Length: 69
Image (tube, rainbow, N blue to C red; front, side, top):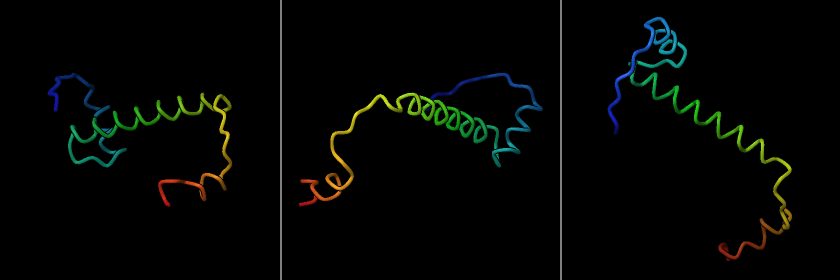
């Protein structure tokens, strides 16, 4: 785990802790960072919509998976 020192406005940290139901400042910041990363990944996935081609249909994927046989 990396140790980092940052300066944040007290009101912002208090509001963050309240919004994410965190018991500590560290927990609040970790939750906020994880949420931000998740949101950015969702945006990237949505941008890929229509750019990928699937050649197998759902039925083939479901019933012809060689790993299950």
